[in-house]
Length: 184
Image (cartoon, rainbow, N blue to C red):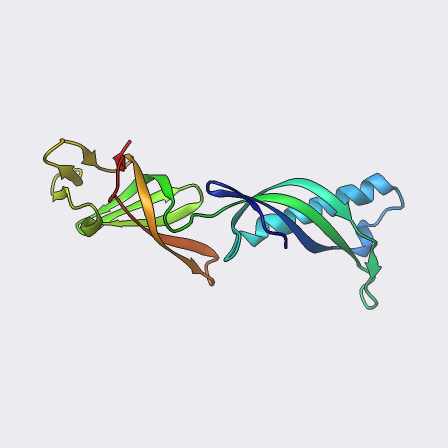
């Protein structure tokens, strides 16, 4: 794995993986073999979801190299080492992000940002806002009148990030302490 170029939440990364092509999918025509390798790579890539180091794997951008295939003795399948470039999505502590509120609780709200479903904003991290019990619960800033309610986009700062290995997903805690943070 090569270190990526940081583009806000997106990383451009070059990876080396092994792609296994079943013997029945092998064809002597080079283009069909390359297509089979690419299709298998994309299948494997989409099944991976996320890694702790790279975040959510978003898209393969280029297939850079297909190495020489090695036949597996017992199955007849062929293993091809491949090098490819991809984009991944990962948030970092201290980064300012925008998320959409999808759940409101008395003690805070949950937001979504890209593939991350569990960004938590505690009521303790939005000190100017007070919980309002209503048909549609919200947090209200009595000074400015701004509201944090379902489907509102919030600009916030990432306080901490945790990778959940079993679910292959990230959770993060965010806050509104800072300039230009809050409802967009």
